[in-house]
Length: 341
Ligand SMILES: [Zn+2]
Image (cartoon, rainbow, N blue to C red):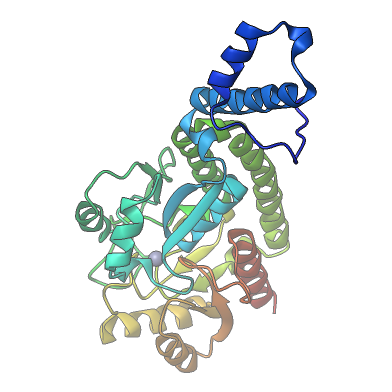
């Protein structure tokens, strides 16, 4: 109906011309040229009216919800839930250590401009409060772990004297059931920050949650043939407590729930004694930690190095754990193969 004739110039003041024409002539008198002008004028009017009544988020159209995630695992959840509607920035980069991160001024800027900030909570990001404050302190924040059952480290799980039993374990994402709670929290927070995208976030989250359900099933299936008494492994720092509880594996680590403190010579001696006494078959390296300690422990105990586990950080895109799902699949493959040999 509003097809335009590209050769016809738009009159300088269409509103005045329109009134003038209607006053002087009947509808039958209006020439073809003037009809086209009138149609063009209507198109402009309809366009202006539509622009003034649409909500701000729809007017922005291509503008995405800016999301800041503190580390790569949360960033992956955010991308899966947000899809094309979000622009995700991750503060601690792949292979980085979230426990000992030193924020930059660019991080403060990212938080200042964010529509939503996603954090783990449970004491993981000790550096965050000061960063949020330096950004102006107005960030809308969601604690992704909200609603999970927090666990405290049990005696015997960690052999470092500095961060022993009783410490709150922040690595809740290591249980896939908890990851599902994270995803639901992120979905709801995105819908609140960008209501126009609520249906999209819900659909994306449902599809991703189905994948997580399948992942949980596969982890249990991979472990099923391994007797529970053989499911004992040594990891570098105590990052697998939720994983261990969910899937019936015993993890022992020379380093506590944070990587801040180095284990002492006495801690290492204790763990070496335990590996020999309990005939623990494998020790594992971590991508965020110095591998030398675990190599030393392996050589002094005869335990094999079972490979690298990914606990707190994904790899870059070309690595073997570039997404949460790949990370869990890699870890369980690595553990199952070391315990089966
Ligand atoms: Zn950790």
